Length: 135
Image (cartoon, rainbow, N blue to C red; front, side):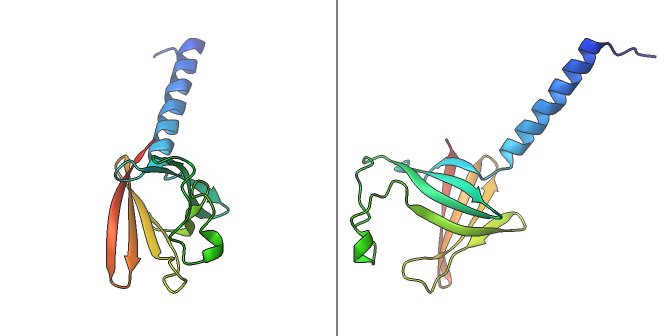
């Protein structure tokens, strides 16, 4: 019979907790992601049961404006801080959302692929997928 000492119990508990935290971290889309090409960083965060993602860094600097926004009132706002992913809901292994009928808002899906995040935007039956990396 093996006798487990107090120190051995502490080591076992620490190992179990470490494995749980690594597994949880690896499976979460929440956090900061570097977009494909490295031009920006997006922070994905949870709000209730939905996910949103906002621009938190731009390679060209935080003074970049939203000049391509179809709403002229929003063209003078800074891009840093703007949500580019909104209202994504969990569906299986993916998060999905968006409204393709609302201006320049498109349907979107995101999912983990190993340590990377796949981000797919749809326009009608066409789509483009990017690979983002964890910051």
